[in-house]
Image (cartoon, rainbow, N blue to C red; front, top):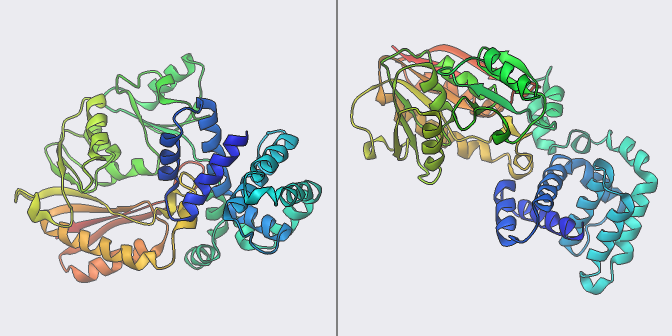
Length: 416
């Protein structure tokens, strides 16, 4: 546990310094190649847990130690230990003992007593601290105060439910390959394998509990893919028909590209600016045995890759704050800043304006984000329609995080 606490604290520190949780974990695990699989899993679970509950943990720590400690590494160690005491089955005596031992290697061991005292005090006062934290919004909802204010303005009836849903563990949802079967047929296979789930649609199943994909029947054969049910709404919303020429403008890792090809016989160009991420697109296409033209290029600079032939459909899954997928990436809510919206809004505007001329007359473009913030969604759509007289809104939908899916926004626009 000593190394687990130490390394989880290092991951949290990297996130506090601006790295994504995914990147921080990958860097640490590459550097610590000798650690066991179970230790790797524990580090990941604790890191995710600390960031999921960081508002509450910070409140407890500042109540117990009003002033920040002179050694940030000790702050992170205490957050990790508090999380373990409050939310894991780890033996409390072992959590405290290992945290104190680790503190012995910091500041010449002068703060071992402080670490011991803080954690023992938390054990005595846990119920009191849990109760008092409900009066602090950042602690109660485990989101930054500015984020809470933004959601309260945007969703006066739903903001609390959105925040609470964003703190839950995400479901594992399967998209059944329509070329090989449907959800009911695959559910029978799951039940034969001793697993269970819930039908969400004709080709979607939410598993009762997450499992490694290779334990599921038919993965190598391409019978299903893992994709959130909210993300599965993109391909049907595009109003596809066989024979169409389609552009997936920000395709990696390829989930939506493959879904489109599962539903229709179409000519798809899968584009992404990150050539390394396109490897995932190739892998997914190969496993599902689907054809697509995969190109590395900047969707905002069509002159560098477009062949001049108009597309019947364009999926513009634009860069965004990812505020709708916080339960999968709890670091997002702590890494984002209010100023990010203006910068991303500029990128989003430039991208859709560059793609619009590539759309054939009568064609449709689906603007998509995994965000729940109006600045990236409804406000962008209104501005786009004002800039383009030949654009007509067909349909728009904001999905908020709930037990069945993450948060997404879709707006289908037709070129008149």
